[in-house]
Image (cartoon, rainbow, N blue to C red; front, top):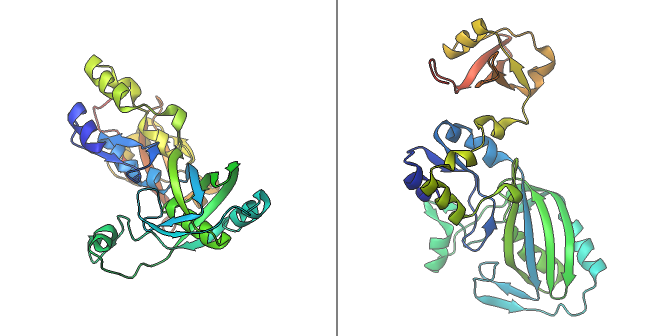
Amino acid sequence: MVTLVRRLSGERRVGHAGTLDPEATGVLPVCLGQGTRLIEFLAEANKVYRAEIELGISTDTYDAAGKVTWRGDASSLTREQVEAAVASFIGFIDQTPPKYSAIKHQGIPLYRWARAGVEVPIKARRVELHRLDVVDWQLPLLTLEVECSKGTYIRSLAQDLGQKLGCGAHLRNLARLKSGPFYISDAINISRLEEAFRQGHWSELIYPIDKAVLHLPSVTVNDENERAIMNGRSLALGLANDTSRQLLRAYSSDGCFIALLRYDEQRGYWRPEKVFKERGES
């Protein structure tokens, strides 16, 4: 997608805010130009997924693309048992990523080690599952809506759930419904994107840069402070109530997003962290 957008737009600076597995679909924020400087905020944001899990079959990749490694009996499971098992994963958990994943060991993705038949140590990672809702239950298929922190592997969740229920499980389908502030209802498909470039109105599909950081508090500065920010100078804004947030969105008097400011506790000043409006630029 990054390659496609780069080619269509002619913009060299293009990046994405969170990979999807090859078999998954859904929201993928793509940033252009100065927007790439805010990818970190989108990547750190929570995600929401719709996951279809098939109980009774485990695979080596933890999804439907892998080889079956075990078959169990899920026929006697009740919805109450499944919901209780699902609820046990809510909160902070230590999750082991799939061996077929892009995480690197000694600079090489885990899936390459796995395909070569080499077992390598995989460290568990602390992730947070904020919400796990059972939205459909038709044995052996279970559909969950999952709200989670970055770095969560829904494939691993399916695998772990199968182990907890004692019948095995794998991820059959996965769609990302939300990434940070962006919902799937906001998303466009590839054909519409390509058509917008052909028709020359693709800029209408782009969100303002500050969309990625609207969760941060904001401040409007006067012309003098705007010039100071553009020159990289720190400011004493007298915003004691906001210093706990550490970061501020700064806007010019005409409403233009110009910078992110970070609070310097030692000096009591707000210093420019990222400046987006260049002198003479609209």
